[in-house]
Length: 163
Image (cartoon, rainbow, N blue to C red; front, top):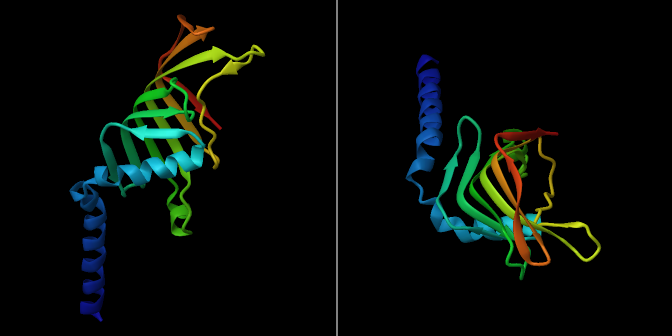
């Protein structure tokens, strides 16, 4: 009985160490195209990852993308960010669902304009799931009117929104 419990404890410790250290040995950049395709499908926009891709399983499953661009198909204006981190719900993953609980965007920049009706026209993604938290660190907005950009002086430092 004691050796069985000891064997189970050792197996559990090895599994936790593998989950903690294992993702550091995987080249996640090899899966960049799959990540881009899945994100494009979820948002309905073109998503490009130009930087590094990192993943972590513990303490919570997290994906971090460096230098990301999000734009409408055929639109030259894009939302650009230095990094985007997605923290996933562990309980949802156990049910086979991919649901991001928290999204953190760092160094975001986008160009916004007005359409022919005077409404704000910008490359905003449509999330197909509910977020518990959205955090934006440093947001730069350039407002363009009839194709001529002008700085809207809309800089938000350490802006945070929770739903």
